Image 1: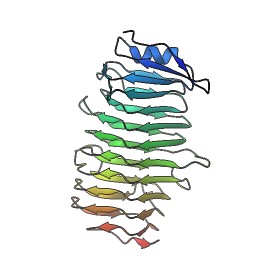
Image 2: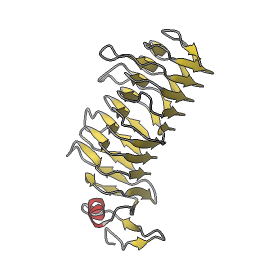
Image 3: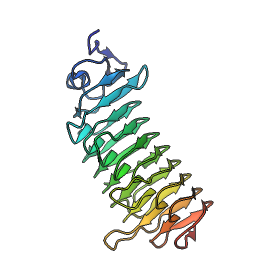
Image 4: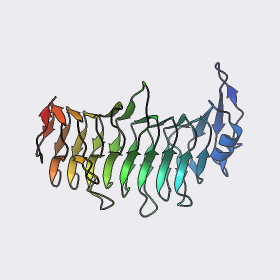
Length: 282
């Protein structure tokens, strides 16, 4: 079977390309596709790194296809265009990152499994200086900084920035959001960040906000992490302030279930076994 099947047009003019395992099969399909197209990546192993420079959806079908960068490049998948969506894939073998989104206005990563296989990769998902993103229902393990890293967010306009339903375990930090969420609509909701006890770049935490204000943390469960469940941290003297914590649960974390170095952080309906500092009512 050819690695790239014929493109099928959709009603909106975008096309669907079916991709099957073969030499550089996905990258060849990316090169052939046009912005707005969907690549249906059929089950199997794809030993390649990807540069996605168009607004495409890469969607795994017939199972969960594995994209393995084999530690040959900094990232297994580089999303270099606005609107790149990754769905229902397995990703490993990035020397530093599984999926990398930098300096783009929008993107989506949904139901993707990330594993560290390069002896010290930093992030499953790396998001830096982006606009509107959705990170939904992903799973990451083994990363020496964070399963999900989000830093230096840009103005999102009317849309929220959503980190929801992810399972982060066995990393140094499950979810790390730092620098630049002030005044933006950032929602960290219904994630499971347990067992993040890997020695690495920072305090072993389920969820860490570092020098970040005005974030909503809601419905997260964060147990049995090495140091902290939820860590509202300070960096270079800049604290994490005025964040809202609602209906979160944290227990059996190494030092504190809630570590609160900031001011103006408020909470309602949370269940924390231990806290380092007061959390005012919302």
